[in-house]
Image (cartoon, rainbow, N blue to C red; front, side, top):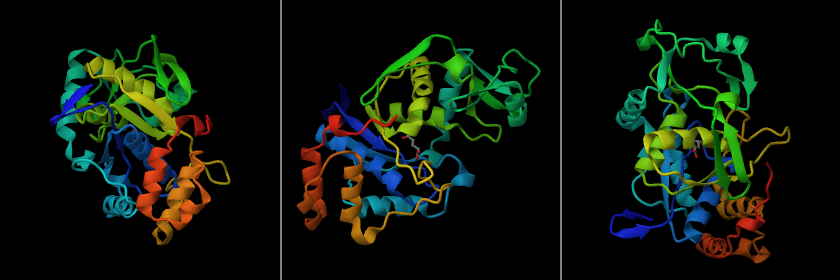
Amino acid sequence: MMLCGNTLAVYRGRFAPSPTGLLHFGSLVAAVGSYLDAKSNHGEWLVRIDDLDPPRVVPGASKEILSTLDSLGMEWDGEVVYQSQRNDIYQEALASLNKLGLIYPCACTRKKIIDSGMMGMSGPIYPGTCRNNRSVHAKLSAWRIETKSDPIVFQDLLSGSICQRLNREVGDFVLQRADGVYAYQLAVVVDDAEQNITHVVRGADLQDSTPRQIYLQQLLGYPVLTYMHLPLVTNHAGEKLSKQTQATPIDLSNALAQLIAALGFLGQEPPVDLSNSDIPSFWQWAIENWRLEKIPCQI
Ligand code: GLU
């Protein structure tokens, strides 16, 4: 339990879209799942814009995403936080990890890593080439963190126990790129802790990232969070819906139908007459009837 303002919050969730395009059905499912889980637990729901990587940000997308959430009747608590404005706190966290002696500069190119390493679940496993190489010039390099062989285990609310040995399955991973951009893995951990998030509900594509995030939480002395990874929406080719796979933006001319479809995807069986109702009635039914055991386990 933690103190938030004057109230005791036992549940603080969030939705953290990347403004690399408009909200599509896949991101809507993550938004609806995180919103319903928070609201059905009488919790708070925050929105954070993951706009860390300037070249990938589509101008105007953040504003559009927020206005879509608003049109869908999804009210967030507090101010929207933008990662692009938080480099100072990411820098502090990196400095704390540096004091622990666990990070090091790395000048290896992607090609070199692919050629020398093995493929892991999230790309090539870094073979540790620069770990003990003191000649690497810190200014022009990425910063990596040393990983360990101890298993990192967490209980996903849908998939159950997940275990990863970071050194074997992922390798030392990047916390800051050579161009100075902080890595998602560092920023998300710092933000979730700084915003007192207690529950993370997001797409299953990020499940493999969770042990890396728990490792950083442990090193930085942050609380470990509760995680639930939702089934992923895929296209006909079995690919995750995303800007890269040309996912179409949510059609707001029938917002209620989109919400009902997202709820149906999450296995919640909304009654047929809900489609003749309105957005407030939709949310009332969906919050009262949110059942984790109905969500299909797809992983
Ligand atoms: N920004 C990430 C995405 O849009 C989600 C990050 C998270 O929920 O941790 O896929």
